[in-house]
Image 1 (cartoon, rainbow, N blue to C red):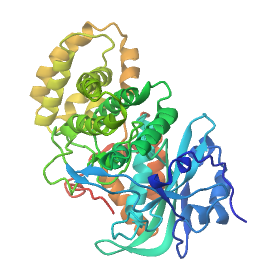
Image 2: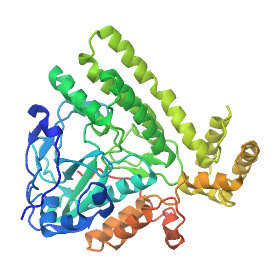
Image 3: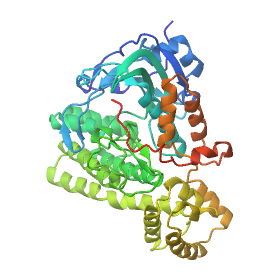
Image 4: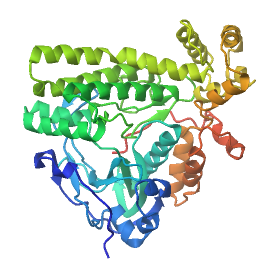
Length: 478
């Protein structure tokens, strides 16, 4: 019996040159790691059916569910600033789209499902480590309240994937509001394909920005979402690591968890990605890169906007609005992180000074902000005297804020997580899973589902890595 899912596949109805219709490549011995029952319910799917042998066959790519129209999307992109005229889903297959119980349309995609015409000599597969990393980190991001792709399921394939050595193969079932990227627009703009650009723009407006007035309105809306997304990343110390335009989601979701990481000790220019040799995508560079990516989106829609000079002026203004949009979002979040409900002109400087003291004192980003609502913030710093100087001005500012202490703490604890996916815990989880032990994988999913709760039974997971545990580089996994 073949599993039937309630697909309604709008992307498959777009011009055929925007994708390649292709089924996943079967694997030898699929076995289930986990189905995300909560997400399945949101999508209107039966988690038990997905966990059945018929469901696992679909999640592994060994069967095509009824209603599915599997395809690999084509796109281009700037990768570390260099232009790649054709990229695309080199190891992913879009099974189709479902409309969830919340009325939102979402893609269901298999990642690691075998070669496609866009694999560029790759094997199209994924190994277990990156699959588990993306599952845990994307679900943690969702629990943090940050727009993101999500993980519906993970399966082992029973085959061996070769990277720096033999690795167990796996497939991730990824869910997103779409998989359309800035690079999707760039692909058709570079080819002068006005008809495809128009169809893609109309599709994105209908799907993501129904209130947008044409291509300009779509770009303006995408810029606003990107500004908020990057501010949210910064507020939890998240470093994406590979902000290429093919990883720039037009609906403002976090996509592609390759060499990403959450910062521990605060350094403004922190880089974890092993492939970011020059720090292009460092923590503090992320807002600038988002502007650059949005400029590429704006440039891509220029051919379908009529009068060129007027369009250039309008799109330039839209892109130039990003810094102010980002600053407003950043200030709004960071004011709440330090417990301010009111607004004063010097607040940005006060926050900036705290970050500078944190950097000087090698303070843990997550634990410092969480501790600000209690009596132990000073203990996070190596240079406690510098913190004391800042804290004196901070307490003067709090005295002018109208909140009660209880309301302030509640506000702070709602934006300052107690738990993040710490890099060393992710690596420990992967190491155990390779040996067949998924206990830590389950533990991380459990505690990270409630990142703003204290959860004293998991207190050890708040600790930064020791010198021997520290993870100083993260890897793409492709």
